[in-house]
Image (cartoon, rainbow, N blue to C red; front, side):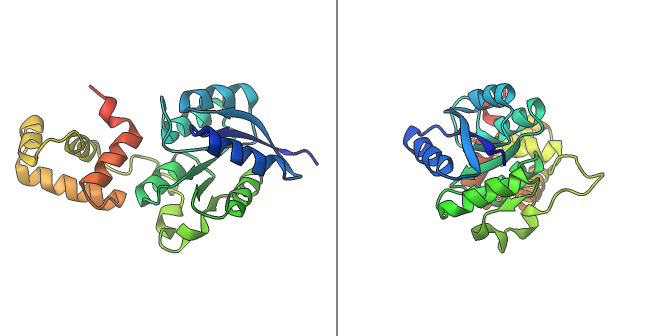
Length: 214
């Protein structure tokens, strides 16, 4: 049987080498490429067309979420597995929403990643066992006809400005709305995304690339 061809995208070289050793010692899989940032992940996936791309979320140049989007656009047949320490529900939702086939925690046993790679190569979805029970709603694919954004454009702008450090009053002035309206948008967006506070909003904004916008 042909081996599962895997691309590794992880900016910590020691971790990446450990993953390579783990995967290469499996009889049914092999690492065909290694990169240390999101931009390189998109480029190598486009060139190599691997069966599976294992990508970290927090990477330089382009983060894992944006890299996943780029890979699905340039190499749609490549299944994507997010390998990360982030357990935030919003991260799981976003990665699965852009087409990732799996979400695995770095703190889980190595067998969890191997199961995810095999499942992804079969066209199946795999969510880390440590996340399944408490994040089951996040693992559900969006229903047909509901492929639009999880939050509205106004809610997105409120969260972006919040992450940039603006107060409710400043956001209200910037958007020409009442402070109460800002509070409602903020509460709705955070509830939809499963964000618990300002730190979660900032992390989510970084993941989305919002803080790089003018």
